[in-house]
Image (cartoon, rainbow, N blue to C red):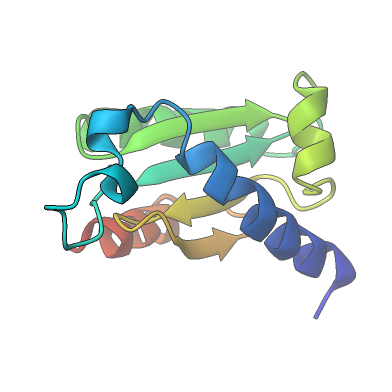
Length: 133
């Protein structure tokens, strides 16, 4: 397997759990509520890493905008330009693999990683799988 892809997977496994806990309050935290027996379901997150140097940058942006409208309220969309967000670029070594999708499902687990992907149907399939459709 490509070393860059392995690096992305490892970085995502280390960083994403910390990001997932951001914004939770004590009342919604299953670890503090003894009545919660099931893992809390979360809204799936579409993390899409892009670079200004991507050959299909404009097309990828357009596809994501269409998907945002289609899945409004069902999925959180987070588009990260690694050329403008240096922290993301260092935390997620996706350089050379953009546009890159990391899809988190309702359990906040990585359900898809698609490097060099701007194909709308493939992105839709990853979203549908994450939300259980």
